Image (cartoon, rainbow, N blue to C red; front, side, top):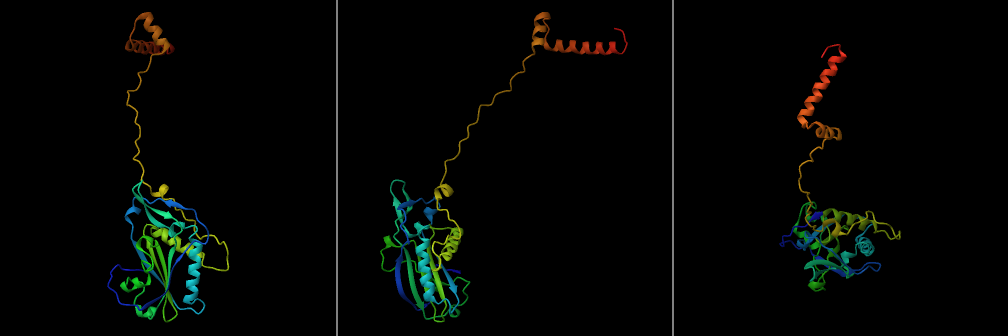
Length: 266
């Protein structure tokens, strides 16, 4: 995989586009809005990546494009927001994703080059931008999909899968999870195969801004004054002694009891 540089100057890869269409979820999905966090509000731009595959007689580019399209139709059911469109909510004054099943982009193309002629495939290369288009030519700007997948066949029989994703859809970890789930659905001999990883799309619980907690602190008070025992209260009323005097009498009484037990006189 190579992350594509945003530098617009590039050498022509002689790309010929054969198909440019929209892919829709294979099942009906609920119409709803996906909350976007405060961080997501500033991530309205596309990230493009290219994934290269060597030539294989058992897996030609035509089969790869067919399976990728089929897998997209399946995975867009649990990932329904990927087939949605950005929408401005005038009540909350925030961007959100309208999960309206408008479709994800799908492009099939070919190149007159081979991967060996492209140089180091693991380093960013401005030419790779042609392997992952950001917009579909037959759609207006307000109807552009949030993600586009492109299969480009090379003359050697190898191919590249280019992906253009709006950063609002995923962060890096979620994008990796999506790729694993997409690959798990690229098999036409298994129906209703479960996803490799269970995704969590509820960003309101994970990344929504929260009110600053305001803990309630009770008023500091001095510790309570210890109360005299009932015996001390009766003694004070009887002989009118104060607490220090009572303690002194107790000490003297203890000393006299000690002398008596040892045979002394007092």
